[in-house]
Length: 464
Image (tube, rainbow, N blue to C red; front, side, top):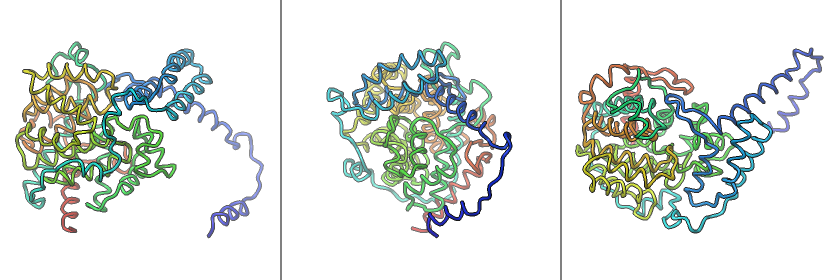
């Protein structure tokens, strides 16, 4: 049946009726207006669930476009006007100003003086693959008990790391130290509720169905089906997807945040399903990353995927870091950031000296941007040197987007060291419960997630 026939059938079956005032449902408009006003206010001023850190996505969008080498002066001039309207609770003016800001960002031109344009822009997997030399994959037995043990260690460590960081994200080293001193464990009763693991679960759901033949569209459909809302880059991507804009366009179309941490925070799962195969882990990360990110934002997910893949066969964390950095394109801006962080590690006698240099160099980037968080990962891994407690201490003290960073690098150490090396102080408060906001996955057992991952990888390998 044609669309016009459906529409005709609909109107033909309708019978007129006289609605009472209560039945006319005009009051829904007022409810929708209040919801839209609250959403707009959140765009300008909100607090991060879990940590309470204050953020402003409207301002951050301008900041991010500046980081990406675009001319944003006209949008910057509108920021104080928006803040004044917010303080007055002038929603009429705030709507106008916000629209004008995003219009300026949408039509922004290149700032030819920006350092950003000195680096290569990576637009697709083929470009990336042809620019690097991957360590050849080695045979790894995913049917072995060792693989099961490593997956268990990786997931449990990741969940503990995320729980640690959820209470700390969005703050600086100095302010964390002022309030908590040296952080060496959970600062409150931990829970597993955060947005980071959400996208890894969506990847796993698609991978379960398609294995290594999974596509960006396959994963994107799981996003639409399972994830009710997003934030920053993921929010834009979800809106694009629901409007029929599919990957890779969904990642970069009208998306100021496409080089933020949202892809980098989900690379671990790609390494977990491609053990000892960094090229395949990188390819899967690229497929996943372009749903919501572009260029350096996608490279961030590739970096974490490679490190996790190598952790199945390499026990030296520093070797993993160095090898993974060598599999990044040397002419990308992402590589320049990571290489600088590694150089600071080599030149410094403490994590804090290395971090302070990176903190200063990257001060123009938002705390949710991929760059400062990638640097934090490198430094924590380097100076933690395989010790779970010390690595978590360092990554917590560095601040920034702590839950994303702690979760990803904890996975590496969990795979290498196993559950026993993580320790009861981290595992016991978490138990076996995983809480998410995903449809059909709001309450899960961590043990079931571990088994699901193993079974999916085994099934995918049997189909090879």
